[in-house]
Image 1 (cartoon, rainbow, N blue to C red):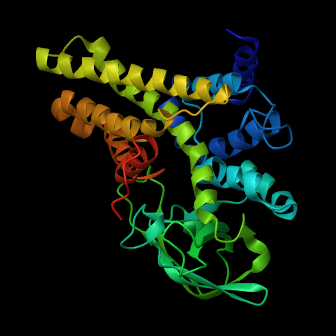
Image 2 (cartoon, rainbow, N blue to C red):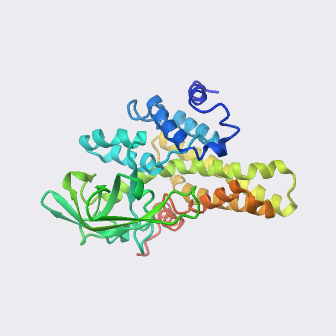
Image 3 (cartoon, rainbow, N blue to C red):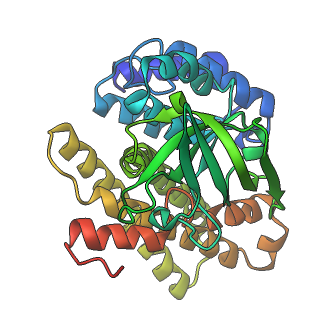
Length: 367
């Protein structure tokens, strides 16, 4: 074990309950533990270990930081409550925020003191950000925004949102979009939660905006360059998703591998899942090493779609192999329901295939 992982293991031993490894499925629902663990990670520099001290990091090399993320996922450490805040919003603020925005907003989102939502998807558009119809017009020192968002995770629990709106209606589809920091407590913001399939699934919301006024100083990144802000912010999230997908597959199939009760057809399916799991792992590692060397890593773009779809197949197989018992196993049911969202969050599989076709294969856009 490397010195970094030994230090991280010592940190986990000091902050997690002594029986955490044996009762991880129990503790995953312990909200107090999840809250305290995020703060402890931030203060100790393990939250975003490749970032600088003071922002939840230790300035670790990318390879060491990846090892820490993998080790944490393998041990199924407590999940961050407001995962898009740390995984998407914080990288966007750090990369595009003004000094004032970073000073005011970065620490609270990383510590979990203030939650954030992502105002991206719209009714009739889904993950196709370029087709958005929410409009923001400039009036003096304010933007006035009208439109609607949907599938806005945790909006009813959040203080802020990164709101994407069209600020230049005459520009081409991928241009003319800006990112605005929206205070969700503002007048004329109407948030309506959508019923969930299970308590383990984060709450989605509809958000309606009727002439909402946002200070011009809340523009995140350059005017009309929201597409770039979104793309670079989401890249950080997708970099974390493949690790979770890979280990989710392993955790789903490991009990089956050890059971010795599978027939030939099931063993064939299990073998394919294990092969796909290894393909995800090695492709993820290769993409990280390529980017560490300063080279383009087009294989990174396939990980989100392939990983999330394989994770869905793994949880479905685990349910089916359990037979009727799977219908009464709360953990199998919860894992299956959670996996259904894997092909939606971080960009739907349909959008991922568009990205692969256009950016990797060089195919023309069909729109």
